[in-house]
Amino acid sequence: MRFQIVVIVAFALLICVEAISTFREIDQAKISSSGLSEARYSTLKDQNKRSLRTPKVADAVEESAEEKGLWTWIKVNTWLDLGLDEAYALKKLKLSDLDDEAMKLDKNYKYYKYFSRKFWDYKISSWLRKDITPWNVWKNLKLHEQITVRKEIGSIENTREFNLYRRYVKSFGNRIRRTLKGGNSVPYFPIPGAASDAELYARVRIMALERTEDQYAKVLLGLTDTNKQRTTTLTGTPLTQHADYHWFELFQKLRKEVQNEAEAAAKAAATAK
Image 1 (cartoon, helix red, strand yellow):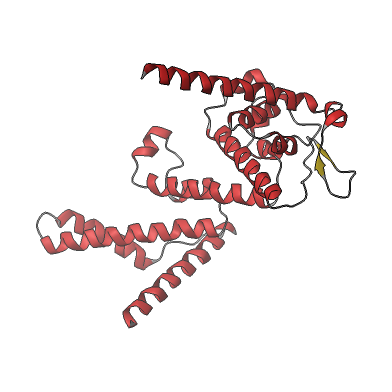
Image 2 (tube, one colour):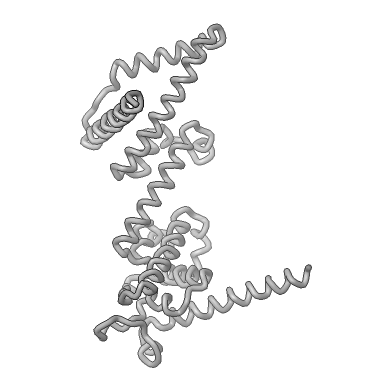
């Protein structure tokens, strides 16, 4: 029991040390590595050179490498807790000067991959909690700087940024679905006047591929009635006369195409049997 307490305290101290070090770096204070750490790394190098001659030393090197890996995991999680970005992680893991192929071969790539995945998990969750609109997420991902019209989507749809946008639209739709199924008032998310043709087309296409139900699609496209005491989705003439109704029409058209393709594929598979 005492040993477990010692281990927990040691990890807590390590995390505190890393946090303090990180804050100092952010403040641009130049702090040199401790003599103890340098001595330890120097010892590890010497042990590596003698590893073929002394089994005991080889065991020590293996143990030290394992400890170093554990320390790296702790640092990576500390960076996440502190809200630091990918550029910081790349620099600290000595990956910032490598191209994609070389990076994937580096021993530190697994730490960066983990950091990146968790970083965007946190980011998307934060955007969802704040009800950030798809258009603002599109801008946050700098996609508005790359394309403006729908015919250009093919040039970005395999990029990480577009995949993150796609993921957000799906998650945003699921959040709206849970809100409405929970009996809550319909949220109002009007389409901003500055929203680009590219973003809106990408949005309705993702919604169509997800086969989003009409009532949720209307919310995603801002087709809601806020004049009533309890906000509802538009129907009838108010819907068809809305300035953004054409996006809803496009969504329904694309969704129908997706359904037809799925039915044709299912029929072909059944015939093949």
